[in-house]
Image (cartoon, rainbow, N blue to C red; front, side):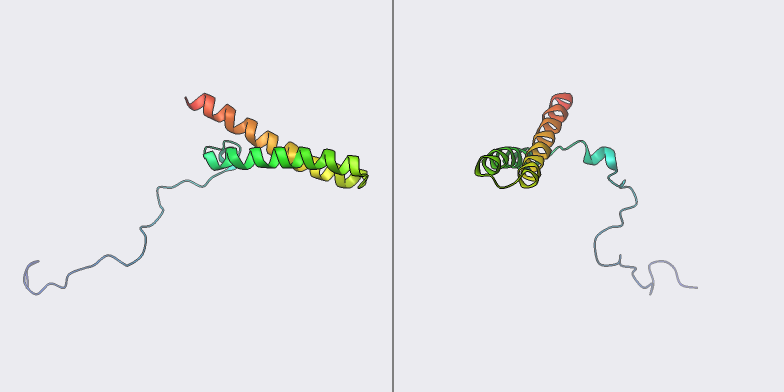
Length: 92
């Protein structure tokens, strides 16, 4: 019989990234707690552009649905920004 050191074939790990066995999936709670500063910038841009664009569309007479749709993007951006600020305040 051969020992572990004599003539044994070395076992190499498979190529590629390690398995993700210890990672949890991001659920709805993770999506509602934005942590990246990019999220904050995106929320600011959406809120300024959406609310400003909604007011402009209403003043230009584009139609109520278009003005409400653009304003909805602004409100979504505002909610994203507020969620980021609340998350930041809780973590600090």
